[in-house]
Structures are given as C-alpha cells and as structure tokens.
Length: 477
Image (tube, rainbow, N blue to C red; front, side, top):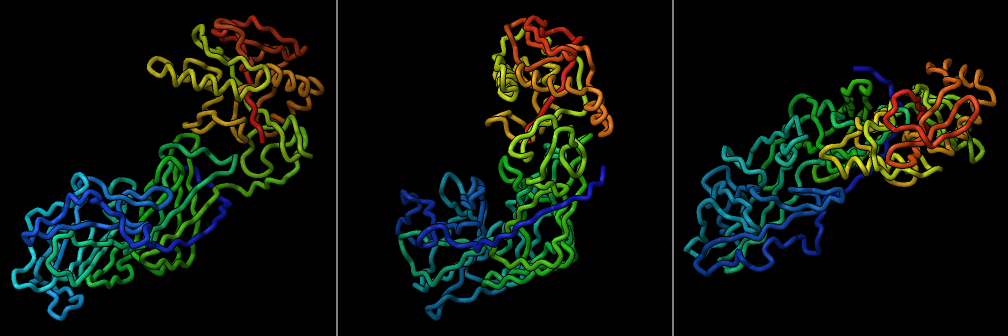
C-alpha cells in the first residue's frame, strides 16, 4: 500500500443527543393498536430520542427497524417512587420485546401484579439473553461497525415509574448511552479518488463499558483497539459508536487498496474526551495543502503541490481558474459500434461526457464504458462513481469538445516544443505533431469530429470505430 503523507484539515462540532419531539416521544403506535384490553396485560409505546436507534440518517433522525429487540425489567415500587432495579429476582427479569409491524411484542404476555402495587420499568437495547446482572453489565461495541454491527453497538436505556395498572401502554423513551463519532471526508484534487474499498477506522479505542441499568454508565474499559467505521449513505460520511472515554493518541486511519489509487493516511487526534450521550462531528480533507487562491500561468504544473496531474494551458480570473491538459494520451476508437449517443455539443466536452454516461446507463444491460474506448480512458481517471452531473465541475477529467480542441491546438502550435518540454519535465509524454485527435463532439451515428495537430483543421468524417486516432483529456480548476 502506497504511503502518502497527508495535509489533513479538521473541523470539529459537538451535538448533544436530545429528544427530537416536544415531549421526548415519537409515537410508534399512532392508531393505539397496542392499547391494553383492560385485563392487566402490559403493553408499551416506545419513544426514541434524536440520535438513538436504530436507523439514523445524515440529519440524525432515528427510527426503529423491523426485528429490533429490547429487554424489559420491572420492579415493584413499594415507596410510590421510582424503585431501584436489583441484580436479580425483580418482578420482570430481561423479558424480550420484538418490534414487528409497528408493535412491540413480548415473547410471552406480561401482566401487572394483582396486589395493586405500582411498577418501575427499565429497558435497554440491544437485547442480550445472557444478561444475568442488570446492575453491572459489560457491553462491548463491535470492532467492525461497517455492517449491521453498527446498530448492535448502539446501547440505549429507558426507565419510567412508578406506573399503576392502566389500560394505556407504558411509555418508554430510549436515550443514547454511548458517544457517536462522525467524520466527513473530502479530498483535494490530486488525491486518489475514493473507491468502494475506501475505509475509515480509528485506533486506540476502549470498546468495553460497564453499565448499571439504574442509569449509571461508566467510561470505557479495556485496552485500546481499532474500530472500522460505518459508511452512512452515499456521502463519504463515516460513523462509529463507542463508550465515553478520555483517550490519548487516537488516530483516524484512511485506507484504500484499489491498484493505482492506494491510500494509507492517518490523522492523529491527540488527546480526546468523548462523553456519553454526545455526538462528535469531524470534517477532514485529505490532501497536500493545495491553495485555492494560487495563481497559475500557462505552462505551470497543476496543482502547485503534490502529485502532478497535468499542465495548465488556459487561465482566467487572474490565474485562479483555468484548464489543464493531461500528461498522457490515448490511441483508440471513439466507440466500438455505430452509436446513436447524443454527444454533439461543439463547446462543452463535459456535457458530451454526461451524454455518454446517460447512454450507458440507459442501455446498461448491453453497454458499459468499454464500448466507448476513448471515453473509458478518460473515465478511468475519475472516481468510479462519477456521473458527470452539474455544469462542468472542477477537478473532473473529460474529452474536449470540438472548439475546446481548437483552443488546445492554438496553444500547442504557438510553441509545441516548449509545451512538450513542460509535459515531459512533469513526467508526461509530448503531444504528437501531425496526428488527428478525437473530440467528444459526435457528428452522426457513424462519425465524430477530429482536429489535426499540425494545422488546426477539423473534420466531421472520422468513423467512430476507427482505432488509429489519438486523444488528450482536460479538466477545469
């Protein structure tokens, strides 16, 4: 794995885990399907706080999922106030409830006592059949939270009482007992693109916690271990749930093993203090410290620090914006068939790339990027999930359109040998004088536009399947 020394920027924000509704409940039984029949049967209405269980979206809104299981304890409240839970021999001991079609179903029916005494209720998630002492329970979060084990690492508690015999369900509001760590990752332009095997973890984490269901949750215990974080949604947003703890030398670790795009980076958080019941949000940028206000001139390498991506051939906004040509080039066909893809824009090659991507998506059963060799070569330089949406975003490679190719030609022809010296000095290959170069501008189902390097002339008659023509790609910054 290639080691890269990063320049990582970090922003930290803190969010207290609080209720998302006025009274702390989200009614999971709006139609009162769980209403008691009056025979002493105990039923439950389970509320959830903002950042609790189970499915938590990017805005920290949570819902329960089908099949979730909780454990219920109950103690007779002889004093008329919330009665402490005992280590054993409570009125109810670890009764399992399962979330099914919007209801919480007990594995066996449970009833109020016949002597009229009130009950104090204690509940927890996730259910553990082996819990034998609810006043001193060791809970361990998962090392690998990328899968559904992320949910199983989220320990919640709820308690209420005293409750007298009633027809209405007992309302329980679950509260998050551990700390939620979130990191949002972005990349500078010359960092490898994040692919499907991109992973984020963090090290030196105490993953055990001692919990008393009466409401006492201690700091994390055990030796420091590495935890693989859970990817939340389509964004590069990663989360893990850990016990509250004060720790030293905690590091975020970033890895990717895709050939040619390997990443092995780390960021040392130093001393950390994560308190139970809070969410800690970090924003990290992986890169080399690219200055967005750096001024470029034609012939400069791009970007000005880190691995070189190409040579600047056009500038605007006093050198802060412009376009870059790739260090390498390609020889091959525009497509391997007479395509009817609607990529005909003479001025915007990015728009043509988008048209090819849409065509491939529409015909995905029998088409992929390999059916468009020159576009596939360009696409391989971008993120694997690049969809070419938006208006020519910065940092995305594309095949230049007809008129963009002519601008390239004019720059090269003004002093091709000097430009080629810039390319080769940066580790690239020179432009081939006297060759036809593909543009992304199609003419019809059979042909596409090319431009001739030596004179700048163009033609619309080059057969798309011809493999003898070359290509260079560009990106905007």
